[in-house]
Each structure stands twice: as structure tokens, then as C-alpha cells.
Image: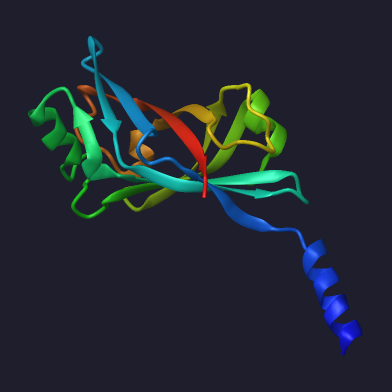
Length: 184
């Protein structure tokens, strides 16, 4: 019996852990978007409610980022624009209250030196593959708590069913995330 317990203890200590050991600091993180309006001005918005985690797999040398954004948390320069982007023709916040992103397993060195982070983005209940560019930072992959991960990308809004005002509003939408990582 003692040998069996010792064997189980050794197996458990050698098993690679894949756990959400870090999370997104919901207070200090934000997500932003911008889209051209009438090719003259840019409409921008900033989401204040973002949450998620960073799960690392040291055995595989990868990390997976999962993020959820509450669409109702958007702040914009005018109440009229805010009502419009939350309406059915854009985010349709009533029926789709969150935006969801989950990355593919990303090599740990990319978290510090920067590079491509591929994953799946869900907006309005439609999931599409996307690739964000992660900026390099001075953090070590094994000590990410306190680090800021800055990601930039572009989507085509029509891929997510946002078909309204195509003559006045660009189909290309810039997305940016500033994710502050904290220990759980």
C-alpha cells in the first residue's frame, strides 16, 4: 500500500499542469475598437468590462488566453453613437451580451518578444478565426503577473453579421486590447 501511494504521489508531481494560473485584471484592462465613418472621421469605443485568464502549459511551452468582454460596458463619445453600436445592426447587445476570444496555444516566448496570437473571436454569436499582433514587452514568460499584453488586430465586420450602413461605415474594424495580467 505504501508503494502504491508513493507511486501515485510521484505520478501526480510529474504530471504537467495546465491551469488558469493567471487572470486578466478586470479593473486595469480594456478593449477598444475604431471604424471609419464616411471616410472622414473615426468612430471609437472602449469596453470597460473585460475578464478572462491566461492558462500556461509549461510542459508544452504554451499559453492560452481567454477573454470575455461585456458589450454593454462600452463607452463612447456620445450617447447616440453608444445606442447605435449596441443596437441590432451592430453589436446587438440585447441578444449577444458578450464578445468572446480564445487563443490557440501560443508559444510562451511570444508572450515576451511579441508576435502573432491566433484564435477564435465570437461577436454576435458568430465565431471566426482571427490573428492579433502582440507587442513585445520586458516581462519573463515564467513571471507574467503585473505584465501588460497589448494586442492589435483588424476584422471585417460583415464576417460577424454587422451589415448595416455599409455605404457610410467601413467594413474594416480595428481592435485593440490592453490586458493586465495578475496572479490568481
